[in-house]
Length: 522
Image (cartoon, rainbow, N blue to C red; front, side, top):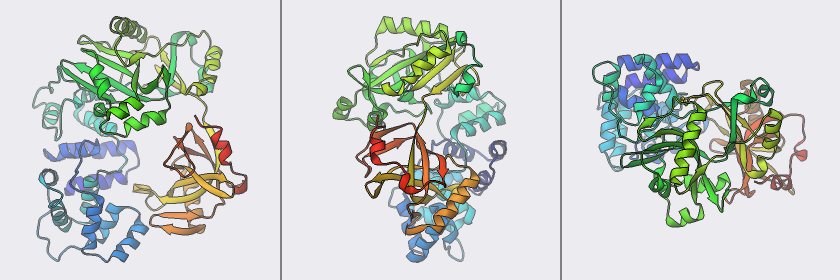
């Protein structure tokens, strides 16, 4: 555990990507099995402990620390794991020696909610402050050290000197602590066999495109289709097994059992998951009613009928088609669809155009149809994982903007735990401000420091890590769309809000009114 704690500590204080890769590769080189496998699972989000909850951790620390002192410390630090690790009082002589990572994982998986807190307390006694912090980050499932699942897999590929695609290809055919994976990468065993398993194929993604970049491209070499406002998915049917994966490789089939049951055999498809009613695509807000559920009831399936609009054919009849050009794959997809007419699926149509001007006119009407924008795909492009520059572009519709007033600020996490970096903002309803969204990005480091100072100087009330502020600062918010919501006092909720500009110059009285918001509702 001490070695894993040192890794996390190094990662959180190493901002550069290459530096993080170096730290992870060194850990894979030096850590024993199965510790390194469990560490990989933690960094890729494949490790969870249902036996430990933040409330249990709080209860543990309150057995040894005065509640008021803990609350004050938590308010100042802003992070539960960091607060507990620093304030924890261990006995004069620890009853246990520092545990290995494998011991923690194995014993917690075997524990119940009744005995898990006692095990956790013993480990907290045995570890130093850094070890306690890492332990609590591990068991609560929020490492927040600036490492994505893809970065961890990239480090694994670089450490073993194998292509990242090879790691991605076998990933869903292996399980933590990945003994067979590490044995293969070290040349001690053959490549894990995944033949016939419904494994995930890494998704191909598009680069964002600005209007200014469009004229640099040759219109005759690209195909265009709508960028539908849903969730990118992959449908995999091999043998008698079927899976529905999100773009990150999460199995979401339990929320959409009707789609899984409708998958034709022997195929891997790329598409967009939508809610469809009478041939019309419903709002993303409707789709969220399904995405937020682990199990879908018959009533939910009837109210929010799922649909997949197909983009690509990656595999058919056991044949991998990804090396073919887009035009060749599209022709095969159209033939495959025409022969089978699968339920709850249709084809994403290609948009006819000759010039970029024609495509711009089509894009201008995207918002009125609930479409995110346009996808551009080079006719000769193979299907490759990741986000290569050139083959595919996403040309999104223009963002909407509103002038809002800052209402609340909350401490961030990780490197931002000492800053008020999460902002809730609202618009006017008469003389009252009503919240319409929350954003935590879109500003520079210098702007963050200035915002943090402003929040501290204009605080009116405190609620734990949250501060209410005087309604004086105007934030211009850019967002993708806005929908009605029963969960917000204003009755609306923004999608993908980010701070576009900080209007230090604008009086709060001139911020937008709820009537302006109502006119923008999708």
